[in-house]
Image (cartoon, rainbow, N blue to C red; front, side, top):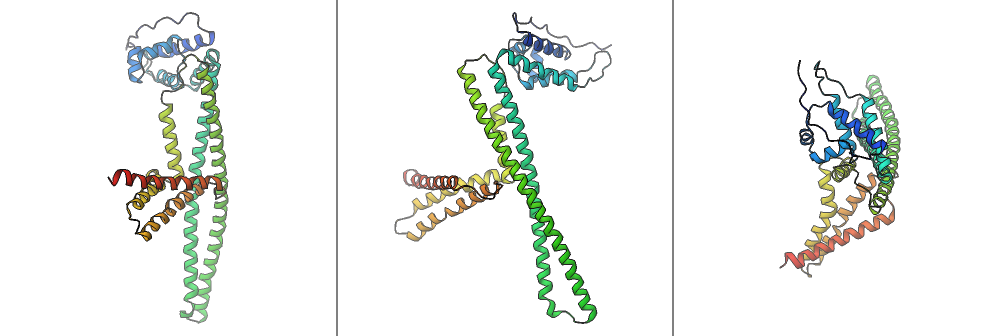
Length: 351
């Protein structure tokens, strides 16, 4: 019979643990015992510090949600020593682990528990916003396809009308011409109705996405305030997430990628919006005062990034337009970047 890999002896539980924290630590130790590996080996496998894993298992620290989930998953897929059978990580074990962690967190640090709750709600809101953005993007593509189809039908209809003088006027030719026209009319009407429905669905989906973004922003503000209160209170260390900053950056990039229409847009939109005014400013600074027309043209070229950015912003609004005050602020920002480009040329490039 195969033997289980020896496990390094776990240290004793921390003395004086709260009941909820003790229950969590015992649960984690039971799961860890199923792995058949040492603390050091497990820590290395999951890129944790061995001391941190030990503190999770003896109740000195409340572990992160991903640590609990990973441990339950690893324990659930561990091979049974007697049958070499894989025991799947049941949903009840995951739920039990999360429930025990939540209770322990609430008992040890109420403020940290509030931060955890807000972070989870923020994650749910962001997932909903992502799903709405994907649905919006798919509907936008469907609307574009239908618009192309409708334009093609209109073109064929006009061609049929313009070629009417060149057609034969026999009874059979007239009947064929009117049959084609009736078919085009029916198809145009059908596509027009489908297009109208798709536009309505797209407008609704944009409203859902904007509402999800508003909810996400509100939760982010509440989370920032809760984190500030937690810091001012000097609360004990409670692990929440190892990669929150990296994940926040990835979420931000994913949001912009979905909204702007692809990976290339992550480069194109900032390059045109911010790089364009900077470049035009440097061009303006390089021109002599006598080159009035070229200077005027470089200033007028600011219309390109302003109009481009306005189109990007407008596409993300369910009502199809943006308010005047944010637009004015954006234009002021573009002009400021333009003058920065001029100063860069005069004080850096020209020397």
